[in-house]
Image (cartoon, rainbow, N blue to C red; front, side, top):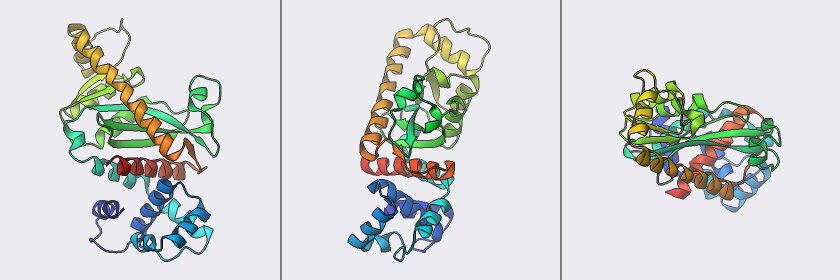
Length: 268
């Protein structure tokens, strides 16, 4: 937690060791996700572990409004930068995998039922992540359950420093803009696509398809590594549950990004 506080101060431009309400809000949201606590659960946790009040730079919470205010004050963009900072140099040279999964809102519903049309995807918030081959999440964003996957790959790539690895994804991310964004970051796109896809022009997607045509064995062997991302989502849901408590999109994003930071802390 102290490391997260230091990273948050660095991102926000706050002097080391200085108390700040924004850092306090980030630490409370992460502690809540790490222990999977409600408001009263958080109060009981502070009663049992008074040292965590000092760690989170807090006095004892005195009402539910305080708790809701702290969570609503947390900026998802800062949490996204914390996630990228935690990955460090691992994200520069490693193979990166991209996918998304849904977390049900307020009650447990299986994402697979919504994914294949048995339930409404509006009952879910969707977490998009990019992680290294070894499991460290280096970029994440949160959308509504019915949002398209494609635009968010390039948004996550843009948060990373330039690198020289590969980016593996399924066909939902196979647009020309995504492939170009991956190429512009110094990486190579390895994205699944139809076997009869037309190779046209000299953009990054055409270059990827030409590589697939020249080296199909290597291409598909690399694509099989995408299964690792399912293990990451499975681990996250086993650790923290597949449910978000929040109803508003802003607080859903805070909750899921905090959960991702906690996963990285457990991974490290």
